[in-house]
Image (cartoon, rainbow, N blue to C red; front, side, top):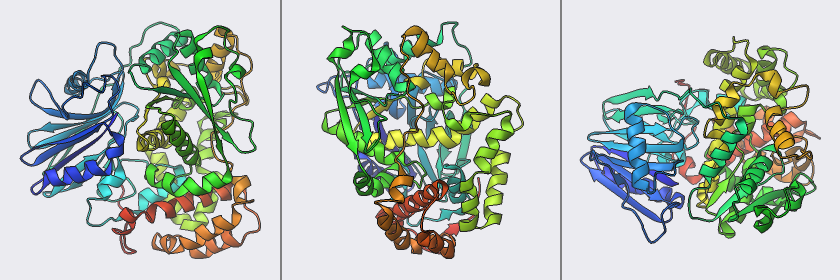
Length: 563
């Protein structure tokens, strides 16, 4: 796992690349370097996972065809023993435009241009900026690119998309001229323009059972010689991972769980999972991280700045606390269950759907959207909703297909960015077994009614736990999030009001109606939808007040350019 950067510029490309790599040096604390040739510079900071620390490699990697590659991530294969071998493999994959069992983004120095690639699910983020005939740059993190811009202009359309759906509907980011590489996309950039293509998804898979693919993926995700942890919530996904790790006789792993104050939804002791006596799990060490309203208050701003955009995900604070403690315990690699909910339909919003329209109404007609219409104006929000319907294929009668297409963009992408950015701030590589091997392909072939029934979700995974491992103590699905409705209406209320008032100058600059913000502040009690919007507004204020952003942003810098 690494941080990667690239710059094309007629002036000082190496200097700009060095500035970018310094901004994200925490992503690869073991080693860093920049390669420059004519107009192009490519940089990389490395967190070495596979080779012993005594065998540091020269980075970025010089490949056999003399192109230089910087990459961030992992190729899951026993046959590749070094970073350079992985770089050669990824370069060949991009040349052939064929998918691979990997999580990786890469930057290729290709004479007077750079080539970018991002894995099929976008597990590893990659952003780029482009100013025609002047400068193009790319980085693992958006905020680093902001730091080399002279000024920043808000893309108003994208701000509204994030406010309504939690993520941009396209390639645009919050700022004009800075974009995100799409999952599976190959981009070639020179100073004259940008060309885009996509790798071909591998649609072939073996006839093995789902559990066999899960076992294979978990085994591959344990590659490496650095200290490894499993994030354990006690839910279906992480419990399956624990059972498989035990089945594979993995002994050199530790587990960690977040305990939100007042909640019983965590694992206090590994015995609760009822794994077989005498198994490898008995050698695991389990850690519990307590988390209170005061912890939420103390880490919110830094969590938002690390995440790199405003959000509705109250879990960013939980991830921050988890990563911080894991780092203190020496963790370098963390296995998580990310992606299982989107692939196997685990969220409660997927229940009781008679057709695709029922799901779409939950997204575009919820109480949160009504509040946003008062804050931003009904006409502006209606236009965003129209873009939503134009972006996705909402006419299909296959409910599961529609859900996955939408959720990969507005749910999974932010979740993967949360994992990447927050874990990497603490020098931890996050790995997602449910997004590898042939697991996603198998999930896509399971019908909606075989995954969801009444209020029950993820039936296919529950069946694995029950039928194969005999585990019947599956906890009811509880969202991994901070209990903001309780805290905002309770002990954090005064502090929350102070934050809303303190950020009013930012809201004014972004055309958010001040009178409705005042109305929210003066309300005696907030509903669940209101607390969600309040959290979003505060994260918006937190991110925009980041000195890197604040110094480059002015009230006039608001644009409405959609891409």
